[in-house]
Image (cartoon, rainbow, N blue to C red; front, side, top):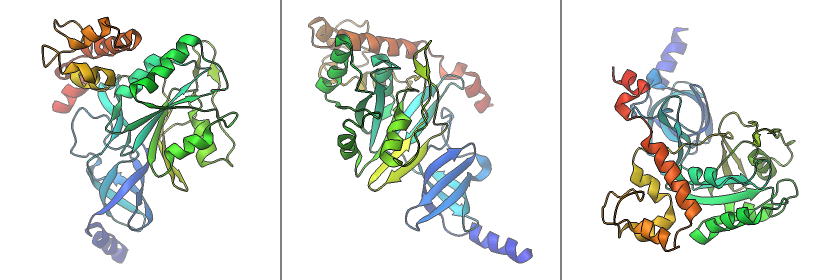
Length: 329
């Protein structure tokens, strides 16, 4: 027994290893050491990483960490390496930012043409949660028709410069074209419950697996969750971070100016605003408002922006939040 303990102690004090988080459930993390080609089960050393107080979860699927192994398959995480990108939302219950996925090359925001119907407001919120990576906007269930108004709003994203694609997990329409957009990159799939995100993942990564889909709530036209936690999946040269379906999505930022940056049509006018701190809502001399009045900015997108801005302005300051105060005590 003493020899086993001594051996474990020697391993524990060996040099750190770098690995990527592939699954995270509670305080257990499945990680992959790419250099060594090994999988590990990890825990956080001391149960807490030295991170900012406003973060809800210290680690997300896709994060790279340094850890010290204490057995052939286990180790203790000592640090999280810098993220190159993330998908982050606001956790209203805990009043903190929550990272859903990290270090992907692009985010595929999955929407639906039918049950649940296309919701541009949700899509705008999702776009504001993307940090430092490309976006693909995916319309699943394209075998159902959009209304004329819905189609115009959907086509607007293409005019704004976003890459969009319409697919059907049920019929297979445009699935091969969608795969072409995914090859050679790591893509985080995000979307509302019921839009068919899990069906698309299964079709692309696990076509032999029986698809598990959630029934739609007829009262709210929203789906039931079929993915309980984020997972890193790969097949051939396609890598996907599959995230749980969400019913609500709130913008994570404290800084209002960062929110306006997620409305890319504002960028060509914002530099001409009279005030550098302009929120593009009520300030005189706002070039974005002037562009709106001249018909250069879509009024529905601008209304969507104002709604998100209002949600930030109504959020409690950090020093008043219960969880924040507890962390500071």
